[in-house]
Figure 1 (tube, one colour):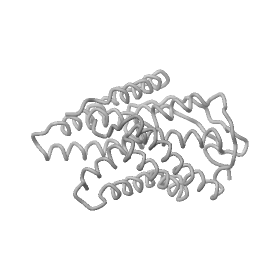
Figure 2 (cartoon, rainbow, N blue to C red; figure 1 turned 60 degrees about the horizontal axis):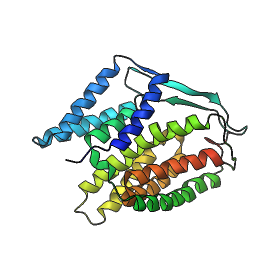
Figure 3 (tube, helix red, strand yellow; figure 1 turned 90 degrees about the horizontal axis):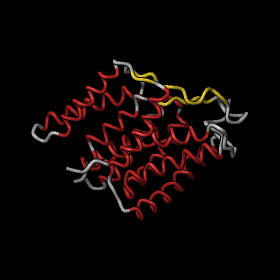
Length: 263
């Protein structure tokens, strides 16, 4: 049985403690936590294969519900009030989510294989190359679509944004989309020709669909970025995927219109 990924758990716990200092959990949140525990025990046991499948099914339902803020008991605190980072940008507000990070905790505890650990050297190389590819595809595409413009900045709220994006957004999303979905599909397709490539493309497609509400342009760009994140994960493990995703978000935030041009 794989050892628990303590570094990732510590980072996520740090972010969650910060979120708790602003928002709070109601007693109804215990229902979600209890169901996640049931799913975790079902997945970790080895005696009953059907129970493991049911555990994964329950987790997928809970992950979707937590990501869409459907479940009660979570009062997410607002860290950044509605504002414009540049005059031509759409307004932006930021909340510290208490529900979505539970997805990351579950994955790191119940499925530690998602980390796919690599050497530090390989992780660094994969991160740099994948970030370059993702930036060209996603940020280049957004510029071509006229969705963002050159707008270098570092506002007072930048450090709040940075910590939230790294600890509570990017880490959780990469644990789910690259670690659990891409990694899980790679295990499932291990006997298929080009199974790893198929897993990467399917995970990128699902990541694109997760941006459905933002419109087809953002879906396309998310899918292209997802290919870069997927390559980072495949060759550099979860650490490389997180670094690539966070690096792209940081480039977008610091150098271009954020989140996008108004109108």
